Image 1 (cartoon, rainbow, N blue to C red):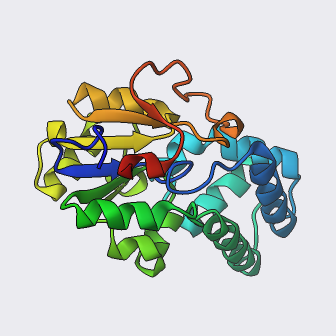
Image 2: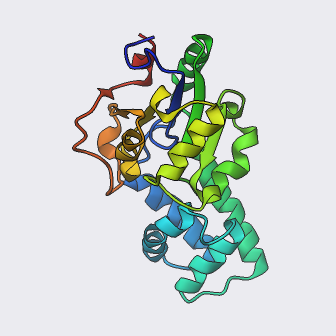
Length: 230
């Protein structure tokens, strides 16, 4: 293990853009267009509503997938039928689950960390599709403590998220390394509690669309997850 994990008892990961590749804005626009076609609304309009409602959606304020889609359609002046909602839910789950594909090196890195005696956790700003699918994902077997914002009713950098993952890992925050791409001011939030926060800024990092990304992060950084195991 590298100096980044030396003396630590756990490694906590962000999900989107960290364990998964960064999804560029074009992907989000394409996904919105697919959903818009089902709901009978304009793609650009739905994309804007999705963007505007992001804080609500990742904190669980709009409910489950069906409730969320009903609320978003209502903001666009549309009342979809139950059949449309069923189709929209299937479309939404399909495009979201396609974004759950891991970086090729992710599972191997996690396996090496675990074999070295480190516990593994996750803190994700996410909508309900991720926890809904979690049991079917390969990560479920190798992440000791997953924490999802939409279930906790808050978002990064709320310290409650980082405290919860540390508690579920049976560690103190200062015994955890936190790896993330800097979205949602997560690195500042993790380090404020004493975690060793590390920015993952790989070749795809420039495609990150989060306006709250910590582009000016001056702390430790790596260009690949594999650097945790050198």
